[in-house]
Structures are given as C-alpha cells and as structure tokens.
Length: 386
Ligand SMILES: Nc1ncnc2c1ncn2[C@@H]1O[C@H](COP(=O)(O)OP(=O)(O)O)[C@@H](O)[C@H]1O
Ligand SMILES: [Mg+2]
Image (cartoon, rainbow, N blue to C red):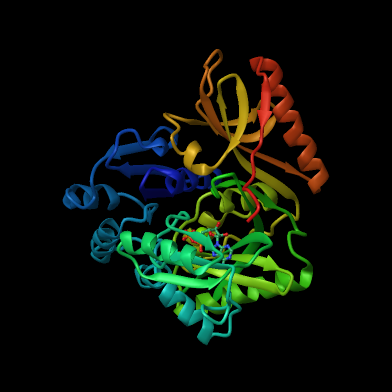
C-alpha cells in the first residue's frame, strides 16, 4: 500500500510515522524543502499542490490512498477537487473539516446534540475564556477575570479578523479521543491525556487505560461517536475535552489527522489509527485487537548543555530527522541527534505494562541522555496556574 501524504510538518511526521508502522510506503509532498517529514518518508516531492496541481495530481494518482496533513484551506480545497476526479480513497472529509474549523459552528452543533460544553458568556461569569472561532494551536486564546481583561482579549480576536467565542473557564485534566466515521456510523478509539508546557503547547501525551474513570471514559467515547455521527464524519477527527469536577466539558473537535495522540495510542495499544482509517475507507477492517498497555509520548530539546522538555512547536523546528528504535533506551524516537551535536531534538515514546513501568522507562531515558551527552540539568516546565 502506497500512501500520498500532503504536508510535511507535525501532522505529516505523525502520518509518516504511523504509515511506516503500518508497513505502508510513503510519498510526502510539501512546498518547502525544509519540511521535516521529507527525511523520514520513503520518497518525497517539493511541490505546491495549489500552484502546481497538475503535477501533484499525477504524483498522487500513483498512490493507493491520499491524506492531507496540513490545515491551509486553499490547499485542502485544491486537494479535495483534485481527488474527486480520481478513484483513490481520500482520507479527509472537507465538509466535517468546515464544521470543526469553526468553534462557533461546532459548539452550536454540539449544544443541539446535548454534548456538555463549557457554559457560554454571559451565563458563565468570570473567570472566562476568550478564543477566536477559527484559529488553532492556542492562537489568540486568553483567560480573563474582569471587564478590562475581556475587552483586551476581544481586541486580540478582532485583530486576528476572527469572531470571538467566550465561555466558562474550566479546569482539570486535558483529554483527547480519536473517532473514525464512514458517513453514517462512527467508532471512538482510546482516551489520552494531553500535558502542556509553560507556553500551553502540548509537551506530552499519556495513553493509559485509567486516564478517566471507566464511566467517564465510556461517556467520552459516546460523545465522540455522537458528534461524528451527528456531522456525518467520513474520515478522522479528534475531540478535546477538560475533565472537570462536574464531568467532561468538550472544548473542540478537529476533523483532520492530529499530531501526537495517534502515535501514543499506537505505542500503548498497537492500534494504528491511520491504518484503521485507510482500511475503513475501502470498507475493510484491520481485524486488530488492541493491547491494554500504557505509553508516554514526549518532546525534548537538548540545548545549552541541558535536557529540556518542550512543546511540539519547538520540536517542529527539527531538521532532517529520522526514526529510531531503542534510542538511549527509549522504545521509539524521531530525532536529529548525532554524537557531539550541541543542539538536537527528539520525540520519544516509551511503553509499559502500567504507568509506573512507563515512568521508570522515561527516567531511564533521561539518565542515559544526561550521562552519555554529559549534560548539566534536566528542565521540565509547566504552565503557571491561572
Ligand atoms: N473553556 C476553557 N477553559 C479553560 N481552558 C480552555 C478553555 N477553552 C480552551 N482552553 C485552553 O486553551 C487552549 C486552546 O483551546 P482550544 O479550544 O483547544 O483551541 P485551539 O487548540 O483550536 O487553539 C487549550 O490549552 C485549552 O485547554
Ligand atoms: Mg485545541
């Protein structure tokens, strides 16, 4: 099976990693020759799919499935049109993406479906969250405690030319779940916990059977299925929620391949969401029964003689990475390490029978890197409490 992946940044690296684990041959197309997924793919092409759609079409016609791994609307629309003329499964659903890329639209659908979301303003009062409806990656998101802060936050959204979504500030564990739909019915996969760095960027994902109590885990899976079936999802989406004392509150849905969480799910369970999606697109099943193990997935940067955990945005600046196994003792890695290098990055995955086992393996990786590279300090920053 040959997969054409369009976009070679974080989502592209995720798609190549998973494709590789599924035994697929990969072709990555990106308009930038510095895109990090190019070096881990089997073949690649530096090409703008909007400007050079004829060439892109010719290259993609040679694939068995095609998946976009980017979030630029003009490229997604160009690909969607291009794929309509080809008899090749397109692992993307533009109509669902159009819903999920607007928090206004998706919140209103989720409310109608009875999905628990944070209370809207003004009902919620302070503290509140102000966020732009159509951005991603925490751009323009503010927590506000007063009328003055609210006005400043609204100005930020206005400057982004976007519509604000103002809602209750909720706190608790951040959790995520992937869902695959075929247009009529949908299946939810595993819940993961998402842990943020000091810039509110995701630095670690944990996949463990007990991220949520059984009852809430079932509710989360049911929410994912209900929303996917409600919007007629014909591909993959993820649902992000916060597990508050009052239960789950859904922050957003995103109908595209996420980065990080599918690899963590694969490391823990051997269920490969990209493989599941590729099979489901041709009406087949992989027949895989998952393991119930645990995993951690995290990003590191080695700089200034220190080993520091970092968010995926910092990791995303990696150049010409490769995939490794048993990397300083860790099970899986994507890295640009070379002996003697001063600055390098790594995404590292560890699996284990239980969370304690995973923690031991993480510590052992940290010790190995510190010792072998003669580093001074291990730094792990978290968000300041609001
Ligand atoms: N209602 C909320 N209460 C508390 N934190 C929130 C709320 N909404 C969003 N956040 C936080 O803001 C960040 C981005 O929000 P999200 O809704 O996921 O938008 P996006 O990822 O598309 O930028 C996340 O870290 C999330 O935890
Ligand atoms: Mg988000």
